[in-house]
Image (cartoon, rainbow, N blue to C red; front, side, top):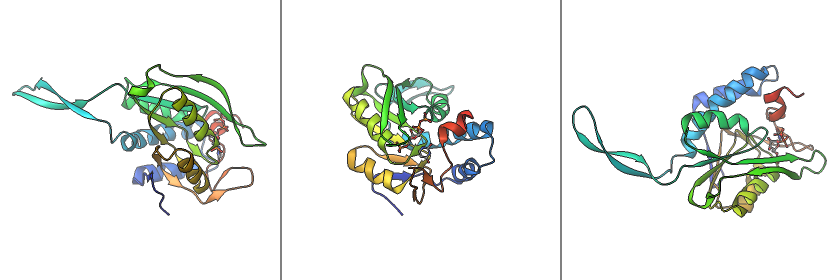
Amino acid sequence: MSFEGVTVVGHPLVQHKLTIMRKKDTSTKGFRALLKEISLLLAYEATRELELTTTTIETPLTEMEAPTLAGKKLVFAPILRAGMGLLEGMLELVPSARVAHVGLYRDPKTLVAVEYYFKAPEDLSDRMVIVLDPMLATANSASAAIERLKEAGAKNLRFVCLLAAPEGIQRLRAAHPDVPIFTAAVDDRLNDHGYIVPGLGDAGDRMYGTK
Ligand code: PRP
Ligand code: URA
């Protein structure tokens, strides 16, 4: 199954680690560690199109024009809570990145995303913004977060997740066709409660041991 605008990161290390995360007996500690490890590999894919310029440097042997990142620092935008699990690894890879926190929870009955917090750098319009959330289920949360970031000025966005449901991909692509999606896997479907099947359960609860 392939979808336009969606990159599935099929790297063997990602796939192996994801399988361990899916297992119901994997500990909270293990789950968090694996999410961080996978986030580094997802970050390489999502940042592939960062622009480069050159700068003059001196190696021990000679002067050279060497590649360096161009433009303003990028912004990571984790959707709270579970998006924080992808943030830590990505900040290790890009320590100078800015962070926009988007606080949303999914109402368990209606599955509608409810905003409770938003804090972003002011100059979003000049920066690549990478939205982070391990789960793309109905896409209510991802769509609301992207809408909010666009209202705040973001123009160049990516969405990075660990697992996506086909329904969520279709809805997010329809709502925000300008936002490419990066995921480690596309699962079969959503169940009647809006959970991804086979999935890995509730990402926030598994990360923080709240159930
Ligand atoms: C989970 C997950 C996503 C959302 C995905 O968050 O982390 O944000 O559900 O579902 P959707 O695509 O149907 O919107 P949740 O609302 O459980 O909050 P939490 O991260 O605080 O646990
Ligand atoms: N949120 C989760 O954490 N897991 C799902 O399967 C769906 C939404």
